[in-house]
Length: 126
Image (cartoon, rainbow, N blue to C red; front, side):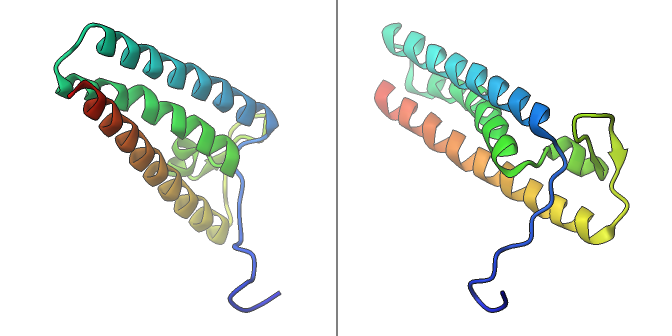
């Protein structure tokens, strides 16, 4: 299908096992960020300390986004893939381009969502 409603081409550089690992890390990181937020709230920490949740939430969102998009940011940066076997180079330039574009989008979404979450914690602490 061509035109404005054509599906966006996608490439994958992680397999099902890699996606499962990233989801597990995502859950662990989000939960640790929530624990930090709770401790800061109970301790009546200064509002700017709420920024401390940014890193675990960024890692958590990154894990979920990598699993959802089947795109590992680190592998994309190296121009590689690991489809649950061993790491190998992506030799096709169009696929490398797609992976790099997807990796940028994953990093961007992780940064924006973690910043929103940290902003909310800062607001709650204020």
